[in-house]
Length: 197
Length: 224
Image 1 (cartoon, rainbow over the protein chains, first blue to last red):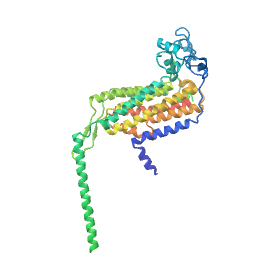
Image 2 (spheres, one colour; image 1 turned 90 degrees about the horizontal axis):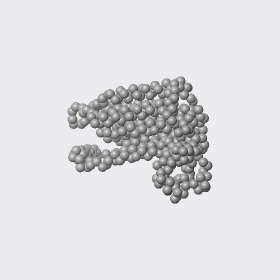
Image 3 (cartoon, each protein chain N blue to C red; image 1 turned 120 degrees about the vertical axis):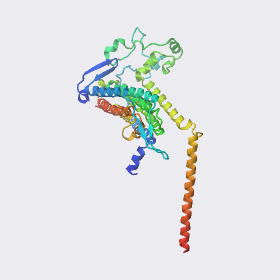
Image 4 (tube, helix red, strand yellow; image 1 turned 45 degrees about the vertical axis):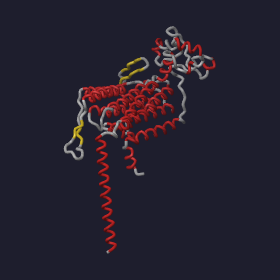
């Protein structure tokens, strides 16, 4: 393929998301062979996996100890000068959450009925990444919906101007066709005449 | 690489809890220029375009921006200017990606009320890219966070890079490329601002230019 053809394809907005998705996919596949290791030096000290589960803690794997406003949880602040005010609400759970955690051993793996500790924990781990992701996806879905409504749902078929345009196009098309037939006819006749002579 | 080689002397830091802003002449200059441009936009009026004559009518038709649309666009472009100014001065990797995503959403918002279908069509395609970009942008920042345990650029600049950080940076890079519409992904974004209302449309272009400059600095800080 000539490079000019390629550039022309790149200039069409329709092809850009596909190209982007393709290159992103390639990078993500390449990411599979990159060695991944969690840095142990994190904001929240992460216990060794399965330790809390084996202990039978209902909050596993998110149990951080700590008593709200009395004793801070088990954390490792990035900026040590903030250490006094950090971790005081890590252990907070709403009454409903306390009830559920006393009943179910799997509370730590779900985030329902917990406005305090656990959601705070997850948000802190992700620094709010998840909320941003969700809201941006919501925004984009609105855009897609509006594009669909503009292009398909809006009642164009019964629009008078649209009908007039279509009729004009059809008339022009048939006139062109008739002209073409005429021209071909004339050509064929002249050919026949030449042959006859 | 550290700040001194990239941005000049470190003029000071603004500690806001976990988020530490740092001030260098480079950042301050970008910040001030963008804020100045935003102020200019706040007081300007949109230009009008003249479209070539249609068939079977004589004379050109003017394409104007209506009062309501003008207000909406001005509001969104001011927010866009402030968001990109914030991206210039932030000292936190996550905040940078956040501002970046915000700029992408606002860019679509600025052209969302345009009446040309071709512009809307390319805005839709750009929206698809912006949606995909949230994965590499936030994913890249999250991978860097997981690999180093911090998002502060001040600390990241003094840390050695390992393969995981490099991968995070590459992910962020492709996110930035898509979001700001550079080289192979330019078409949808270039088509987006073929519409009247110039100073507001130009902020789409300007914000992505500035963000690219800042992204280069951030990637250098993270990688070296």
